[in-house]
Image (cartoon, rainbow, N blue to C red):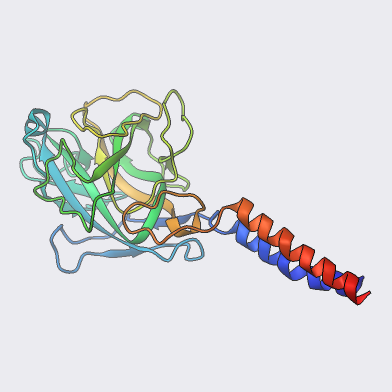
Length: 288
């Protein structure tokens, strides 16, 4: 009997390990680091701080569109510069951003005069699960829009129409986010409603993500809202970090562009293990 238990323990251990795979979250933080502007040949690369959950690295760039042209449907994304300026997280300095130029609060990601965003390029498809905000102009009422790239090849954001966002999916509009520098941060990309929202399908992955200040002129096939009140009024934040999981580690996930495939469903793994146990049981009876 002891020998049988020993022989059975290996497949059981394997099954437990496979079912547990993909549950861990990786964390990338962007605070207190000077990064290169968009278009640079050597943008700063941030590695995951939990390599057991994801080995993906991420590069950042910044872009902006003027609000008047965005509302008219004629606005295109232009190049901006990421900036830290001594506070938690990355902000954006863009052309004609307010009368005061690139100083407080106009060095944040905001929707004042211009709508600004931070582009994230991962080395593999990643399911974003939360967004950390460092400095904010309000403790609990920052509105954020989240897009993922689902088009063919790599996107060219600069020069792209900001209203139609061809090739991009609007994963969610998230109202009343708060300053949060401890992961998990403000939850996004969920499969359930959060607060008074109408939660999206969740588990969406991509190699390219765009985190932008909210603007009601954004359109998309999957506009969702998770809690809070959405408005265009003076949302300022600095991007502190994000958490996520390598998409190939999550069963049944929609990995989008840059996906590396998914693991088998847990039910399939369980059936395979049961079949293996049955074979070992028959073998044991024959030996007896």
